[in-house]
Length: 452
Image 1 (tube, rainbow, N blue to C red):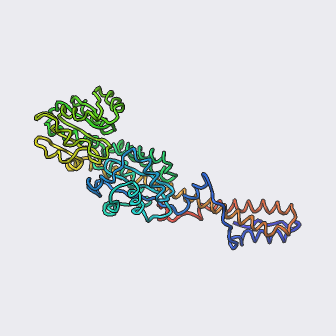
Image 2: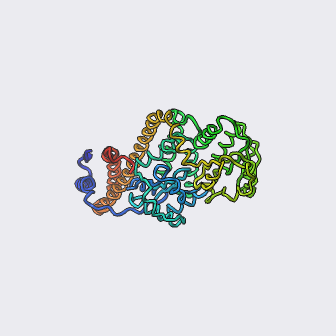
């Protein structure tokens, strides 16, 4: 960039030239005064441009057994309050809490990378969970693009107990909605959650990863068909109203098995039961329903056991269920019932063992699914680099204008008003021309454009 030549014969020529030289060459030597803190939308731009880090800490079926996860499990109804509490305790810029059947994860965007475990322990201590210090042994954590990649893999079913299962995508959308209701996400979390929804949709439509049983409910029905050798049981009882029990009722209807739906809130049970033409009962009639059911599926969000020895105490010998399937976390069915003669109990651990041999075909689709995930990770990295660039450009423009005004103020006493206007126009043009070069001058090295 050249300094424009000033024509001779212009009054004040030498003074103008000296002022221009100062503005052009010397402004970096004068420290810029701190700018007022931005607010509103501008605050977000400056926060993104600063040293913010995306991080996640969580535990799942791979990192911890069911009995360890149970005390720390969060229900769908807990997520909004959980997000608020975690955001306030961790003092982060953005937060979201994800809970599915087999995982709980804490996402945050914060100036600091450290303190993830301490914040989670503090959260569970205030939430009332026993011995939250045990999380140290079972949690995993990711940062930056690794955190984004992890969420994309979760949404795609690559990290699920049932490879490729589709319930997890619906559960992620519910967690995101709850986080939004708690004002938890900002620019970064909005971006990665929407990209994760793309990942889940594309993997299931462009690969065969989701072929086979529809998640845990489908796996449970497959296991039951094997046990009954294709013969349909005479009756079934389903406990709880949610997506899992809706799939169970659908599969039972297709199999031709008469079912009864039991739920704590009768109105919700009646609404779902009406869609399948089955009767609905309140929870206080559970014992009566158990006496007439041959198989039982339970998937509620209750904090303790829903089905215990007391419920079966009054069932006549030879009547009542022969098979119990517990799909809940925490468990709905007292494990001691599995020791009753003639009664078989399956829980999530049993389903996990059963599913190990069904994943071989779906596993062949993993490379194609991972390719989609990596494509979206690159898209996220590019977005991060653009956001940082935008923030740096705004910071530079602000500092250049501040220095420009300081220098004009410093030299104004030696010039006439008409000369002030000329210098003002020239200094504006100088800043504009310099800002055209800013994207190239401020470009991040490749290794830095990774989303924190």
